Amino acid sequence: MTLAVIGVGLLAGVLGAILGLGGGVVVVPALEFVLPRLGQEITIGQAIAISQIGVLAVGLSGAAAYLQRGLVRARTGYLLSPYTIVGGAVGSFLGLVLPAQAVASVFAALLLYSAYNLLRGLKRVEVEREPSRMVTPAMTFAGIMSGLLGIGGGTVQVPVLNLMAGLPIRQAIATSTFIMGLTAVGNALVYQAGGLLDLRLAAGVALGVLIGARAGAGLQSRIPADRLKLVFSLLLIFTAVQLLWKYWGNA
Image 1 (tube, rainbow, N blue to C red):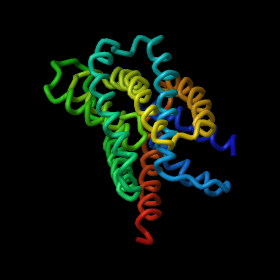
Image 2: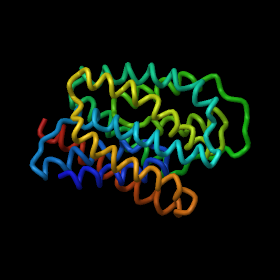
Image 3: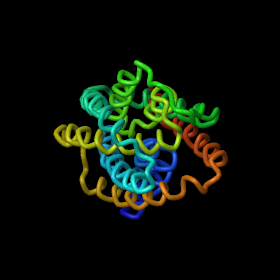
Image 4: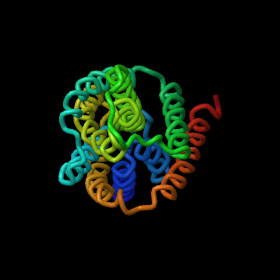
C-alpha cells in the first residue's frame, strides 16, 4: 500500500508541476479509487485532507525549481497569496461541513472544467499588460476551491494569472505553484483540527510529490504539451464520471 500511495504522489507531482494544477486533481480521485482496492476505505474528506499535504509538497518542490530558473514572480505571489489563504480557510471549513455528495459533485465539475481548458488550450498572454481589477476576487475563489477540494488552486490560478494579471503562461504556472504552498499550509491545519488528516498516508503522498514535482518542473519545457494535455484531459473526464457514479449512482 505504501508504494501505491507514493506512486500516486509521484504522478501527481509530475503532472502538477508541469501543468500548474497542484496535483490534487490526481491525488483525491486516485486515493478514492486505489485505496479501497487495497483494503483500506477512505472518504472524500480524508482524501482531500491528505491532498493538502501533497499540494504543500508541490508548492515547495516545484517552486524551488522554478525560482532557480527565474520564472516565479515572487512579488506577485506575496501580494496575492493572502487572498488565496483566506479563501482556502473558508473552503477548508466548508469541506468539513458539506455532505460528501456535494463535495464530489463540485470536484467532478472542476475536473471537467480542467479537461475543457486543457483540450481547448489556454489563451496565452506572452506580452504583459495591466492586471484586471478582478484578479483579487478570482484568486480568493481559487483559494476557496483549494480548501474545499484539496487542489492547489492552479485550475483557477493559472488562467487568472495569465489572462487577468497578464503574466506569460510559464511564469503564470510557476507563480501559481509558488502560491499553492503558502495556501496549503492553512488548509492542512484546518483539516488536521477537523480530525480528517491521516499523517501516515499524507507522508507517503508527500514523498512521491516532492520527487515528482521537482522532476516535473524540469521536464515542463521538454514534454510535447499537446499530447500530455490530451491524455490528461481524457483521464480527468473518466475520473469525473467515475466520481459522480460512486456518489450518485445509487442515490
